[in-house]
Image 1 (cartoon, rainbow, N blue to C red):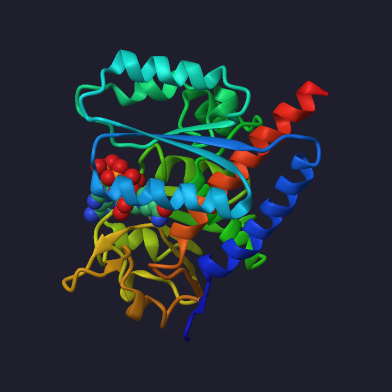
Image 2 (image 1 turned 135 degrees about the vertical axis):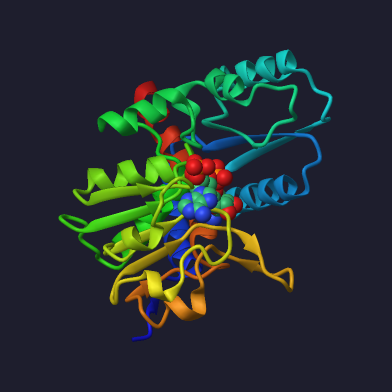
Length: 286
Ligand code: NAP
């Protein structure tokens, strides 16, 4: 079997066109959705991420505000800036690019963001909303994975999903989203003794580890759907995922590539969350 690709670039194009149309509808009412992106320090990967996010906003007609601060910025100053943006009616979403310098408590900064503007979905109120099935912002990466499953018409009900990784930003919210769609969910992590025994039972596998070749063909049940969240570099320095793509694509029914898979979907869902924050705010004002 050769798996069909779930093309994150193509799906993103479709979804971003829908975002752009909804942005235009809001603009007709005099509202432009606005995203503020705060970057502290010079982390090169972060610089690339924020550039991509700002460009995606501009392309879809959203207003973006990129603020770059020196690595020496104090926690108090960053908290004050977040508070200012909480009260700025032109800004509907606030994103603080992580990681922050070591002297700043990242969780404290995230908790300072108004939950109504928490478009990254990292605030404890957003996490609680996801856990209890209440409305709230979903973290963009697992949300993008759910959209990828939706795009192939995959019905999760009664299926066994195995999530590899349990971070607060990918693994755990991913598991909750799959559960919400009635999958039976197993979460694996670094202390899971026999990962292969788990993944071989899976109808859907999400790999979110950050290590190459965590998932190889012998670990995948024929016909399983494989989503690769990982972002790593191979020996040639090229971007690659957690999944041995060449091997696994011969066993899986669907697979996401890296690059061009989950990565673009993450930014797309950030646009969706920001748009929805603006729509909710507009509905309240009228
Ligand atoms: P993270 O916080 O480092 O979490 C990694 C998880 O993998 C942890 O739960 C860890 O277990 C688990 N793990 C480590 N080694 C393992 C092993 N051998 N077997 C099974 N589980 C293992 O990373 P993250 O933030 O979730 O990100 C994961 C990957 O996704 C990274 O490559 C990151 O760059 C990528 N990512 C991509 C996007 C995107 O847009 N495409 C967005 C976010 C993240 P323990 O909890 O036991 O330590």
